[in-house]
Amino acid sequence: MTETVNPDREDLQRRVDAITWFHSIDLGNGIVTRGTKSIDVLASEADALLGPVRLEGASVADIGAWNGYFSLDSRRRGAARVLAVDEYTWVHPEFRGRESIELVNTTLRADLEFKQVAIADTGPDSIGRHDVVLFLGVFYHLFDAPADLLRIAGCAKDVLVIESYHDALELTRPAMVFYPGATLANDATNWWGPNPALIRELLTMAGYERIFFRPHPDRGIVRGIYHAFRSSDALTRRAVDPSMPRSIDMSTLPANHRFVDANPVRRVIPGASFPRLRRWLRPFQRRNPR
Image 1 (cartoon, rainbow, N blue to C red):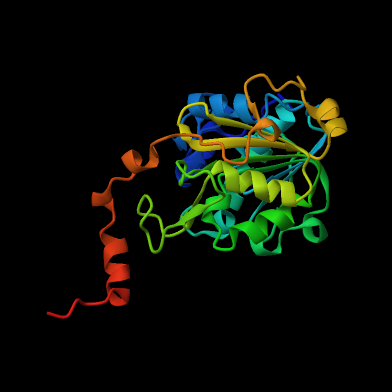
Image 2 (image 1 turned 90 degrees about the horizontal axis):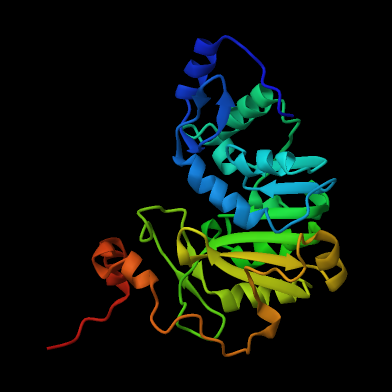
């Protein structure tokens, strides 16, 4: 697993440079993929996402794997089997994600498995059930996000790990904000901004008894990390420390818990960034008769 294949370095560098990377991955021989996310950021995220989970000997499914950083890190942390699942980024002509993750797998001899399937078709019938399921940075990209999450939740035997963008943080009721067009970060694949109350309710509906939340290690409350355990037995079996010391046990929070008094997302996405939203709404607005 730690051994690196030594193909011609110039050829490997050429192949790496031809791909648009999201994950920065050290391939050895002085070659690091130039991802949008740096190695330091990814390492910090991996410690928060995977660090609390006992992965030794586990079967892991990484849904939305893209270049494969978290699939690879799951193997490094002792997972016996890792199934990388994706379609959108793998077939995208610019991202070339399938080519990238296969290059990583071959170069690092990671022994990853692959399943190319659309999120709408991802569930126990298509990818099976696994001890641990990763669902990182995907929820808010899905138009039918709640239904997709409830179906994907069935793939996890013990633990489902979710990372998502947040909005509606000042609301105590379960809610999410809709972003039509490319109104969030100029990205037309960003559809929803859920709040923690919504994620908690969906996970409870999916049958998870112990749900833990923590803000993102670098982005804070604007993004959140959820570790959902099927039962107290699963928590004991799969958590490195069942007290989950850096997380909030959501089962102890009152239904009207308010995470913030003023939504920080408004500072991240100022009103000036919404010209497309205003244009999109214009046909639906009534003109005031004069």
